[in-house]
Image 1: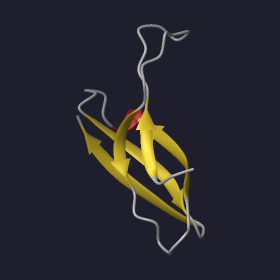
Image 2: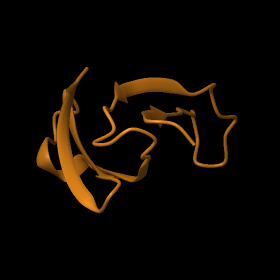
Image 3: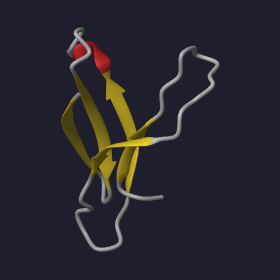
Image 4: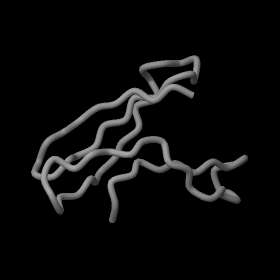
Amino acid sequence: MNSKVLAKTAPAPEGPWSEPITLYQATPITEGSSIYAAVPHPYYDHSGKTLVVTFTNHPNTIQAIKITF
């Protein structure tokens, strides 16, 4: 586990899938804590130019970021 929010792409739902790319490098709140449960929220921008992602920054802090493509 690490503190990166990653994504993979594919031409179809069944693949083949690309290698992961880093969308965001999160900063852990405390030394040795982890980032997990990243969830994309594509419905905030139907143009596809941005993506809101939420994730948990342990200990139990939900954070949201906006990624611009």
